[in-house]
Length: 110
Image: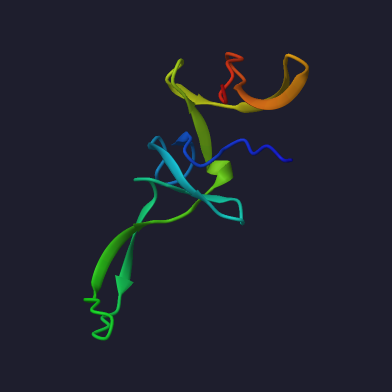
C-alpha cells in the first residue's frame, strides 16, 4: 500500500508558477502526477458551438491541472504551507501508516 503525501480533499498552497500563493482544495488526482485544485490555475478555453448538443460557442474558464511539485499541503496551526512525512503509529497491537507535518510533528490523518 503506497501512502500518497497529498490526497483528494486536502488544502494545498501553490508554491510556484502563475498562481503562486493561492490556496484551494484538491478535487481530483490524475495518474500523471497532477492535481485539479478548486479555484486555482484558471485558464480560458475557446469552445466551438455545437447546435446538436445545445452548446453555445465562446470563451469559458476552467481549472487546469497543476503538477504535484508546485503545491504543498496547508498547515492550519502555523497558517503556512508545510512538508509532509509518513510514519508508522502503533494502535494497541496494530500498526498503521499516517501522514504528519514535518514542522510540528502533528498527525494529519487522525
